[in-house]
Amino acid sequence: MNLIFSLLQVAAIFACVIGLAQFSVWAWQKQKRHSRMGHQTRTVTQHVPGS
Image (cartoon, rainbow, N blue to C red; front, top):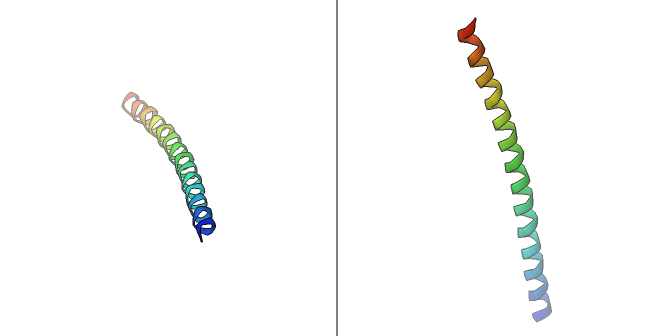
């Protein structure tokens, strides 16, 4: 019983670490895409008043 509990604990910790890693990568990609999109819109808004 103790062995099963410890294995479940290790599995839960492993799942948490993997979830955090996936979430951080997803958030980083989303932030990178958002900042790139913001830069494009900024250049577009700068071009509009000039023309």
